[in-house]
Length: 237
Image (cartoon, rainbow, N blue to C red; front, top):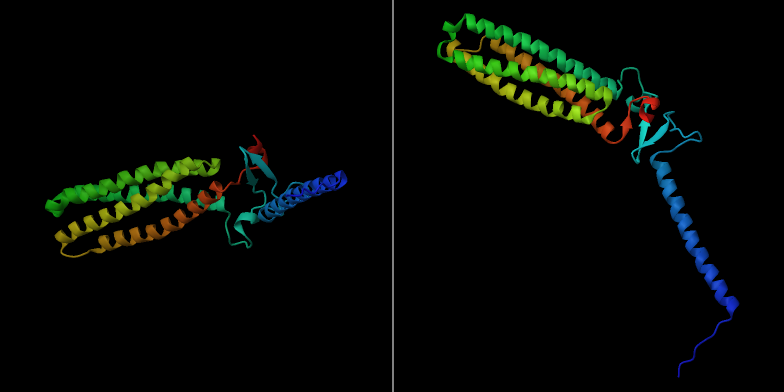
């Protein structure tokens, strides 16, 4: 036979209240733990601002931060640059360098046209390589203008094409430089001063373009993570 223990009603009520209280305590602990984690990720002061003085706003369901104090991004020291200024400088540099390369290789095409007999059979190969560089740099000039607009308006769809094009153009331009210099070496029986100057100019641009690419990629990552460099009024609109 099985015996069944009957508890008084007050004991049952006490157990129900105890179980409800334990559930409520667990919920409160879970909520407080989540709030502590959010506070560690982004501590907010009493006036709804970050510790660096940049007000926090929400848009489209995620948090955005309008960087009022540039030291939040650029760190300390007068010799450092803000992330947005670095990206703007990279876009302006890219446009200026594209114009310079177009002028230099346009001059080289005109010189080769005047001395077509000297190049002989390799004339068309050298000219095709130079024309390809000219076309690539003109396209990069347009994409650099779009990059400047994308950095100012923080539109990543205008920044990404420049990132892809700068890598592609520099790779293909290196092939064209080597190809044209090898053809000219076949005629001149050696690398002359123009070949050495052309390769030195290309290597210098590779270094500068790498720095510009790093600045743009840094801006791209920060904007993609939700950091905004606009004024708070512009974000709220």
